[in-house]
Image (cartoon, rainbow, N blue to C red; front, side, top):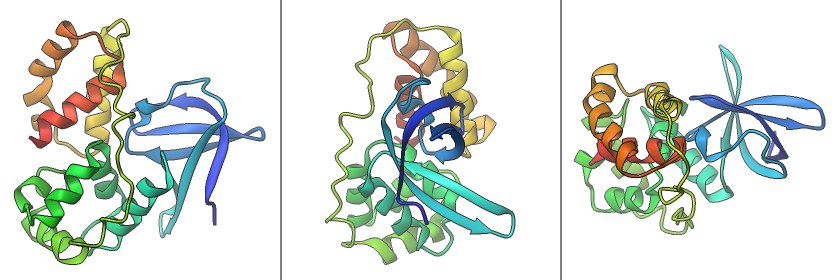
Length: 202
C-alpha cells in the first residue's frame, strides 16, 4: 500500500495527473489536477490505492488531511471515489465540514452524485467527526494568480468540471459567467476551475 509519491509532474489532464517517480509514470486521479504544473519537481503527493473488479486506481491528494477527508467520505454508504473527488474539488473544505456539522443537506446535494438520501447519510456518519482535520486550503486555490488567460485554460477548466461528474447542462449554465470571470480577472486553469466549482455549489 502506498502512502505518498515524491516525484515530478509529467502530465496534467482534466481528470488525472501523471507523476514520474524513479523513471516510472503513475496515473493518479485527483480532485483538481490543475493545482499542479507539468515539470513541477519534488512534488509530494499523498496516495490512496483502490482495488475493484475493474482494476486498480490511484488517487492523489495535496496533503495527508485531504487524503483522510477523502477516506472518511468513502466510508459513507452511497459515496464512491468519483463522488468523493468531486466533493473535494471544491477547495472550501472548512465550508464542507461546517455544512456537515450544521446538517446543511442542500449544500451537500450541490455535488454530482450526491442526492438527498446520500447527503443525509453524510451528515449522519460524519457530523462532529471531522473537526480534528487541518483542512485550511486557503493557499491552494490560486484565485489571485495573475497569468495570461487563453481559451485553452477555459476549455480545460470546463473539461475538468465534466470529468468530476457535473452534467453538460450544469456546466453550460455556468460557462457564460466563467467566461466573464476569465475576461475580468486574468487567471490560470486552476483559478477558472475553482471559480466554476464555486458557481456550481453556491
